[in-house]
Length: 157
Image (cartoon, rainbow, N blue to C red; front, side, top):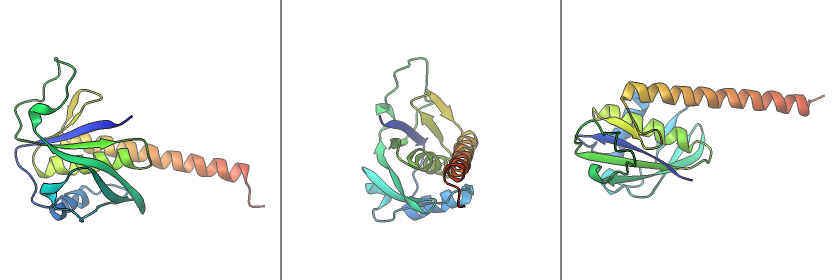
């Protein structure tokens, strides 16, 4: 099952390079490197990335904000927005982290917000960055636990 979030803003970044600079400026614990193989204004479909030294990615498309699916009539997008960048991701390694990192940096760079369709909630860039750090912290903790279990089950004796 794919999940979907949107970066909503009133301006667009001019390039993937500019977006990458915004990601780097966030200072997330695990590095994210966007593919620069396509122009930003032509993004549509899967965007390959390098996350924490390995391949990952997410789908990324330009949307019209009024077309964003919102099943809850009690949830508003805050105000009318000019632009929406859609992020779709599944459960493969790093997809959740990559999409949230990219959306957070994009929202901050464009003075926008992140809309999580699953929670039906808007996140400011600061709130989204906190969520990313929490997700990455949980990921690091899981890796530590997995390594401890592996050492216990397969001691190097």
